[in-house]
Amino acid sequence: MAERIGAKVNTIEATPGGCFTNDEIEKALSKHRPVLMFLAHGESSTGVLHPLDGIGDLCHKYGCLLLVDSVASMGGAPLYMDKQGIDILYTGSQKVLNAPPGTAPISFSPRACHKVFSRRTKPVSFFLDLKWLANYWGCDGKPAKYHHTGPVSAFYSLRESLRMLAEEGLENSWERHRSMAEYFHAGLEDMGLKLYVKDKRYRLPTVTTILAPPGYDWKEITAFIMKTHNLEVSGGLGPSVGLVLRVGLMGCNSSRAGVDLVLNALKDALKHCHRSKV
Image (cartoon, rainbow, N blue to C red; front, side):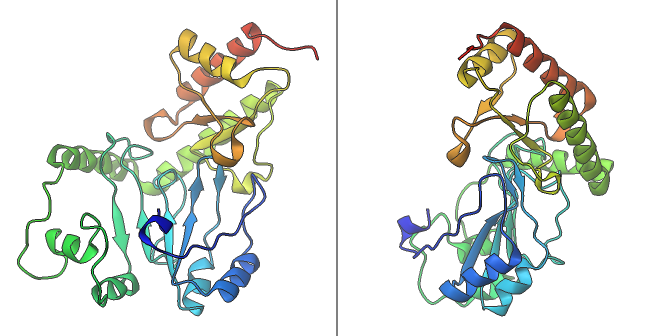
């Protein structure tokens, strides 16, 4: 997306199922000197929860802003925007927050706001003109100008989902997702299945990646579970295509009942789907 609007993008790659060390990140920052670094906190294609401590400080050391995607993690794993030096943080309403899709909460640090408001050229996208959006949202202290018609009903549903999260307590939600993920992982291992992310510290508690069981066609497994149990278990995405099964247990579905439902469906699939003897 960045390249489509003319940005020069440099990438660094981690071992599949792994994450970067802060030393590796600093080397990349020193080499490329970017104005912005993007990192996914909850990487849903591999099931990795990337550590964030110290990365914001490294970015600021090299004059770089830190942009973090928390779509699959916000509300389900510890995250501290100010403490961890995150400059731009966004998520999606449809994941852990339990709201219908269509809204994307986003927050900017004072450092990021200064960058936005000191811009001298207009963005190529009218829809993503943050100066105009800041005015529309009432963040610049100036009389509001029309930009678009917001999804009012979606805002009300998002507000209700946030009320539910506040009622449970953010730390309690983090702990629930952690404990249910551990319960799920233990159940999978009891069935003889293996997890894609080897290091427990880096497992995303909201999305679990399971190595496709040897001898089975993963597509047959997902189709059987959908048809027989009306549950959607996904295949891999990006670097994990053809390698894993992905299961999302987040928000209200992060419960013992939800975990048991998926475990029973997987057991049934392994029992009835064809297994090659080759």
